[in-house]
Length: 388
Image 1 (cartoon, rainbow, N blue to C red):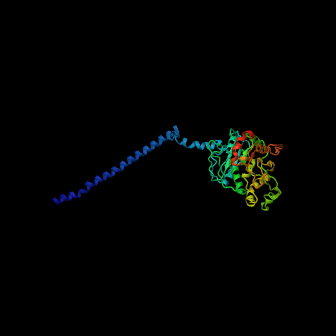
Image 2 (image 1 turned 60 degrees about the horizontal axis):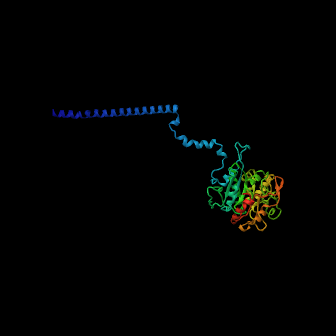
Image 3 (image 1 turned 45 degrees about the vertical axis):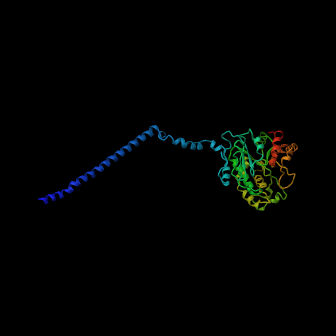
């Protein structure tokens, strides 16, 4: 009897345990299903509420900070004409020469400007470093903002320290080393022209050095240049050894000897002629390869090319006075002891020339070469003789 009871207990062990385990297993899926349904209901409710809010209140009411932080820059750049016509705010760009010349060669096809354009003169200083005569120029430019631009090409290692109040402050362009008489000199001049062309208001371009001074007040020079029918680029046919004697027959067929010209490095030219120079790919390779010392390319490249392309626009003279009376490969340099009232009178009483097909005694607007020591006497005599 006892063995039957034990047997019955042992046989009933599993049935007592199994039903409890199955109950827990069935309960868990039902709870998970309830939670899942609740989660889906909440997601559906949130989605409906979001669609309703977007439809009736707009997307910007949900994300109010996105538009102010992103869209104004995009809209101003794409919709405002000023972004296309304003000059670069920073001259120290990262463009290569190839990229710069390409960018500067772009020209509007419509000639009439859709805005009020005040044409400016670009004063381009080709220097080794500092501008010792800067105080003279500061006085010259004073009061004429908006009628001029300034660009400085110096040695890459030179760091200018002009104060923020100076007209020369932050006017340096990306530069490279230049050598006198070599193509790197013309490269620097093209670089200056290209940077100046990026300002669509620059209409005339004057090349100057650190030893140059203006000979008249700003209004006089602006009127003289702006009203001229010609650009002041020297381009004459020199039959001697320092002219045609430098010609190389390898310049053919682009340039024949009858087209070979010589002229002063220091020029003034219109925007049209400046564009001829920066976009040139026809003559540049010939002069780079076949006009090397003793052929001084800065005396021949621009005069010859512009004679071929636009001789009718050239005055065939420079407006920068120099003194060759002392002889040598370079003009005379004047220091402190040279600057007297008699010197000023002699410099301003130059020979007669032609201006707009009429004779005039006003032939030079600038002069060189002046040493740093000449600054003090020039500064003192400028009001009386130069008008500023």
